[in-house]
View 1: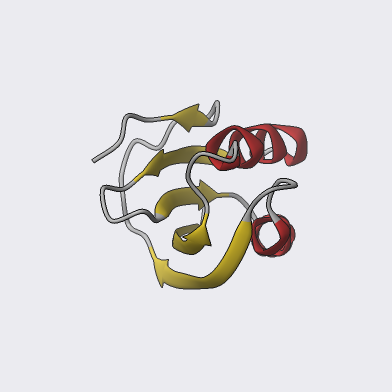
View 2 (view 1 turned 30 degrees about the vertical axis):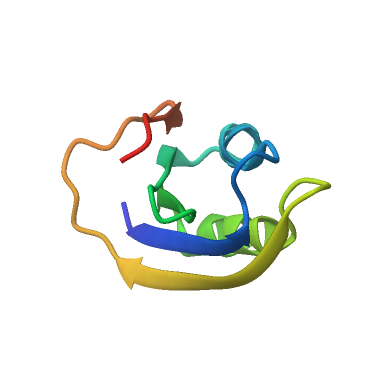
Length: 92
């Protein structure tokens, strides 16, 4: 199953962004995880088919109500053992 690593920059911490990503990923059937990063960004790894990942990226561009996404960086991800049930991980 294809996976993509996303780094989301902007006002994305302290606004419920991780919960938003997790809820949306579970709703559309993606595996993977999301976490805050010490630099103020949010990192997510999403695994699923290309169309569903594209839907997730579009949702991430909007985010929850008080978020202000400036940019999203995308990179292929080869991480093994991704959770099937989307998870929220601790900040790194």
